[in-house]
Image 1 (tube, rainbow, N blue to C red):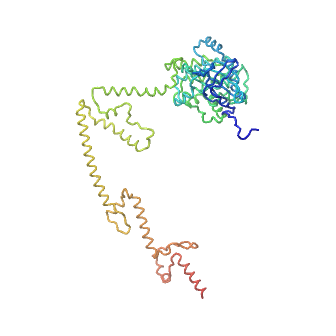
Image 2 (cartoon, one colour):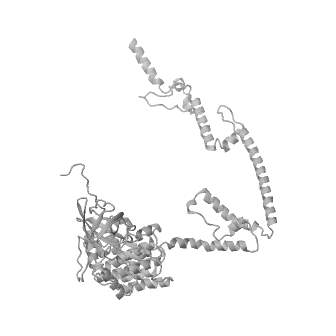
Image 3 (tube, rainbow, N blue to C red):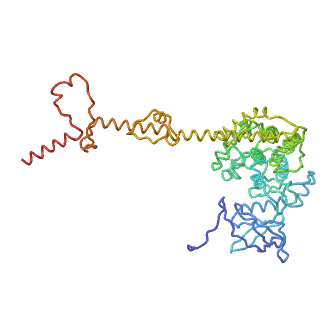
Length: 550
C-alpha cells in the first residue's frame, strides 16, 4: 500500500492516465530500430503528450522536423491511432491515391514509425509523425470567431478529399474539428486532418444497430446524429463537417449552451434536420448562403449506410466559390475579415483628399462636416441615454444651419480675417456674460440670508424661500418651514413641556381638541379639571401613599 507522500498519477479531461513528462534529450527506438531524440513539449492531449522530435544521429539537432505522440500502455486512443496509421497511412498508398484521383495535394498525414519505450518505471507507446503548423481553432479564435465563407468552402473541399480516402480505406474519422485541422509548415493554405484516436473501422452493414457504449463519442458540439446513437457512419463525417462550416461562418452553433447535456444536444440536432430551413435561419442572422443550404439539403437526403456522393458535395462548394469570384485552389486568407474591414474605410478617405484638391478652399471645420465618414445623426451605442449623447444629437441637428452660414471663398486671407473677427466677437460676448453673471451672484448673496425661524420674513425673503437657492434648495426650505409650524402648534396646545414621555404602562393620551359647542358652557364641565398625560396616574399614586402613611 503506498504511503501518504506517494505521487498520484495525473488524469486527462476524459479520464485517461497522463504520462509523466519525458526529459528533453531522451532517445527512443522504434520497431524498425531507428532512433529518435525528444525535443521540447508541444502540447498535452486528452490521453497523452506531444513532443517535437528529430532523427537521432549522435548529437543535439538544430531543428525538430517531426513530432512524437506518447501515452502509457494502459490508454487506448493512441493504440487505435497507431494501428490506423499502420494500415491506412502508408506513404506509397497516399501517393498512389493522389495519382489516381489527379490531386495535387491530400491533407492526409503519412505514417513514419511507432514503438514502445520504458521511462520512469512506466511503459509507453509512441507514434512518429510529420510536424505541422497552427490549428484552425486557434486561428478561428484569433480572428474573433469568424472565417470568410470562401475560406470555409476551400477548407471543406480539402477535408472532403481526405474523407473520400478514409472511407475508401473503410474508416471514418468521427472527430473533425478545428483543433484537429493543422496548417502545413510548407504552405499555410494546405490543411491536414489529424488525430485518428476515435477512428472507426466500418463495413457495409444493412441494419442500424445503436451501441450504448459508443453513444455520444466525439466532440459533443459536432457529434453526428448517428454517433449520438453509437453508430459510426460515412454520412456522420459529412454531418460533422457541416456543423464546423456553419460555426466558422456564423461564429457559434445553437446548442453550445447545452454541451454538458449530450441528450439535449442530440434532440436539437434531430429537430434541426426535421425542419432544416428553420435551423439555418436560426444560425444565420442574414441570408443563408446558397452553398450551405444545398450542402445541408443533400446531406439530409442521405441514408445512414449510403456512400456519400463526394463529387456532388464538391460541385456545390466549387460553384459557390465561382459565384464569389474565387478559385477552389486559391489562398485561404483566413484573416481576411480584418483586412476587408480596413479596406472598406480607405476609399472614403481618398474621396476626402479629392475634395481638398478642388479649386475652392474650405475651412477644416467645413471639411469635417462634409466628410462622408461623418453622418449628421450618427450616435455611439455606448453614449445612448447619456447627457453627452444628447449634446451630440443637438449639435448634429444644428449642423445644417452651420453649413448655410459658412461662406465659400477663394481668398485664404479673407478667411483668416473672418476667423479673427469671430474670435474678438466671442471674447466680447464672454466678457459681457461674465459681468452679468457676477451681478446676478451679488444679488443672490444679498437675498440668500440664513433663515431664522424666530425672525419674521420680509417679502424678499419669502420670495427666496419659495424659489430656493443652490445652497438651500426649495424642498429643504419647505421641510424647515413645516417643522417650525409644527413646533409652534405644539407650544400652543401644551401648557408645559415637562411631561414629554408617558409612563410605559399607560399609553400616551393626545391633547384634547378645543370644542366650541353649546354644551361646553355647562357649569360641571367648566369646573371640571382636564388632566395632562401621566398626571392622573401620578396623582392617584400620591393619594395611595398618603393613605398608607396615615
